[in-house]
Image (cartoon, rainbow, N blue to C red; front, side, top):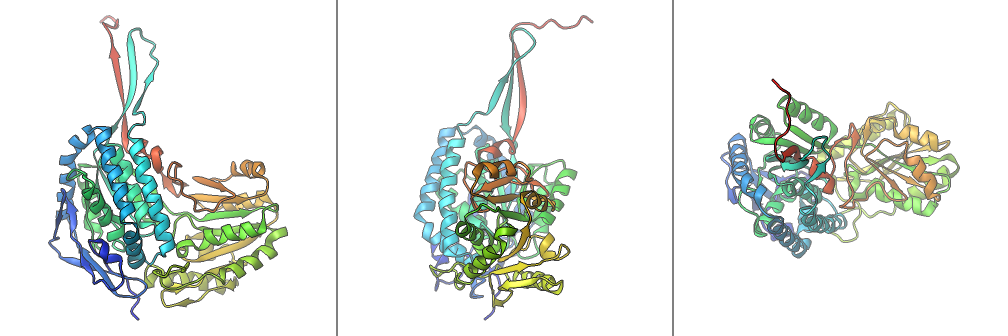
Amino acid sequence: MNHRKTPSSANEQAGRPGIGPVAYRYFSDGQWHAARAGTFEDFDPWSGELFATAARCGREETEAAIAAAQRAFPAWARTSPAEKAGVLREAASIVERRSDGLAATMARETGTTLLNGRFQIRLVIQLIEQAAGWLYLPVGEVLRSDFPDTTQTVVRRPLGVVASFTPWNGEQILAWRAILSPLVAGNTVVVKPTELAPVSAGIQVAEILHEAGLPAGVVNVVTHGPGEAGPIADEFFENPSVRCINFIGSVPTGRMLAERAGAALKRSVMELGGYNPLIVLDDADLDYAVHVATFSAFFHQGQICLNARTILVHRDLHDVFVERLVAKASTLRAGSPLEEDTFIGPLITPDAVRRVDERVQDAVAKRARVLTGGTHDGPVYAPTILADVPEDAMVSTEETFGPVVVVRPVEDADEAVEIANRLGCGLTSAILSGDTHRAVRLSEGIRAGSVRINLPTIDDEIQAPIGGVRDSGWGRSGPHSLHDFTDRIAVTVQSGERRLPSF
């Protein structure tokens, strides 16, 4: 079996087994277009079969999409909240109607399980419905002035064209987040989905918004083949109409894009990876802790930026906790992502399998112990738990995008926090304790964008700000993101004449 990665289609049938690959064009100015360079292939990571083909866009197509977004911007910025909300509510109803097909498409395009696909779609519907309400949030404030008859206000105004980079993991929810936040703020958007998920992470969102009545040019999608993102990124950074770079992805890529954005004096919003700790205190409920840890570490095969990468367990509970966690991990069903009871599906590409295995073997070579897993069957990597992992192992310092977690004993809560803060990343974290007040006090010392108490490290609520600190980036999701995609403009009004200095 050839476990490679390829493209998808332009209708709901594409996600269903037995349906042939569909050819997708790119979306610009409200229409679907062929790319001058033709198409590239997108493969099902489980079967290795061709899933779809998508347009190989370059600078020419990207420039046209940016021009369309720029033309659409003035009218969209002036469109009433009621009209915008109507489009979003219709989009939510379309997502709900197409939910089974969308989940199946994700399973075939990225190998995510139906469990995760449906989880994402529920979040997408909530996100769109809540975003319709963000349109009525205050867009400014009134300040006091030291001068008589003076009104000092600060208003938020949209930036213009936003370029959004969308990833393959969390493909639907993260694509909608990357599009809706700038859209609700009054901007227009050009989306560049990853070549590993052009359909789920971009094309389908454009299809749905177009069907919902979004005006032409407000959202545009340019896709590209493997290793061909450079010309699109170059156009984003060099085209003066693009005012903001919105990126969700890895720390190394985010660092490079942020440097280019700074050089071009463009705003950037970065949601980057994390090495997320889960702390189990000595008063935690063991059965619940094992359940939370299993979900945190292995959901979506460990390919979510919010997965727990290290579990820090009080020494008094450590041995029993590890025994139960190993037993639980061994019960997780692995296999086809299209089967209802599959919890562990394939990794996204053969290269991903190789990288995960290299990191596990690197840890073993440095005298780490594999408590369970450490093997793979084709594209499926077994849930893996490592102990006695030295600090210089790659899996101790780098985000490993796979079902691999490190378990470490700690003497007390202070040591757990010190280890949690040791690395530069700070995306999310979790604390499990029978004493909620104790956990809240402990959370004050953790340097991360989110601290979940008695919850998994993965716990999206749409109204909560998701985003990192330190090396995990800046900017937030949800209604808090509107500040990231607007300029604050001071407007001062003087009634009558102000006494000015004599000259």
